[in-house]
Length: 245
Ligand SMILES: O=C(O)[C@H](O)[C@@H](O)[C@H](O)[C@H](O)COP(=O)(O)O
Image (cartoon, rainbow, N blue to C red; front, top):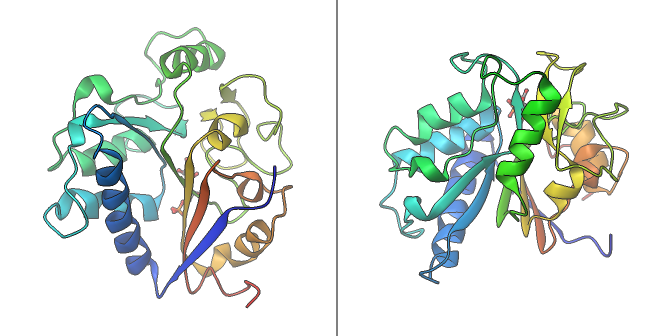
């Protein structure tokens, strides 16, 4: 990894983080779609703050931040809780319920991760299936939340899931420190192949990990994740408390 391309955007509170990300995401997708043949590859994340972004994206499509052709956006997920399709705990279920409320999505371009009960022999098979769906896709923008321990996607610090040299694109995680124990996750090399990585972080319980990650502590997944062109941290004042001025 060369010189860090991290940018930190500090917002007053979590509502402003979500509003800022929604506006900037719509603008960034709209810019990419100026090329009319372009299908934008967007990787979504779970979590409370990301869900607030999706709510706002779906709710206000007529502001000045750009018109998006949502049918020319391909949706992926960075990780998933391996539970039944209909479980309210699924990241994809939560994101889609919010987005599909008013955004016209092309089902062929929506790629939720597999769920338990879909017929895969085990997590490994489910991971292989998603890897083959993903192929060589490179995300234009990859959204990530961060846990208070500094995890991103389902890559946890001091845990086998976090392997910066992972040879596969998708892994099954069977002993996640955060429930539920069974999960699917993209690996760090796939996340770091993204053109842009946007981290969306709010709350004072995130302050210590945010400060470590932004200062470049690569022992934390959140510190090791970087887009090829740009890494943007959208962070509220509480989570930014420990950042060097
Ligand atoms: O799969 C999960 O359990 C969640 O998606 C999780 O990884 C989340 O992204 C972060 O913990 C940040 O979540 P918050 O924004 O709710 O703090």
